[in-house]
Length: 213
Image (cartoon, rainbow, N blue to C red; front, side, top):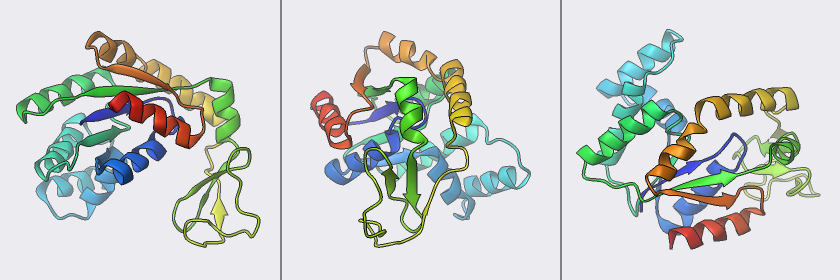
């Protein structure tokens, strides 16, 4: 099964994508991860990415689609999860064309639905383990009392510099301007499904599982 996780920054897309990879053997296709990996891959596409990023330019949609093609050609296990892509209608069209060329189907687009005020409150309270990236939250999943990460035992935790209310409101506005049109786009294609993105992590995972099954 091939899916897109859609939602504003902080809605939990990355967390749910990781759970799906663990539980179902799906492959998470994160454009950020692909770009970082491409820089050191030595492939022709990787050299293009490294050159663009060395100049400080934005990576074009053409390059991102090329990286996605490479990933799909390597195989997608039990299916793929797009996390953070597409972001625009043009990217959605390009992705649809690529999948058609490769004989692949998109089976569902899951919108992580959130309340902005609650989301801002939650994100400004989060921190991550400096060693493994495990996410904690002062409100819902505090750092263990012994000060050690429950995943790796690390003792250093950090907060993102842009996890402030002002920065988050700016990122949310950018999302609504640029990416929210995809909700109507995929609804018209009969692919859109919604879940409450602000529920407990395990509950959101169960809700997604119901939709996929």
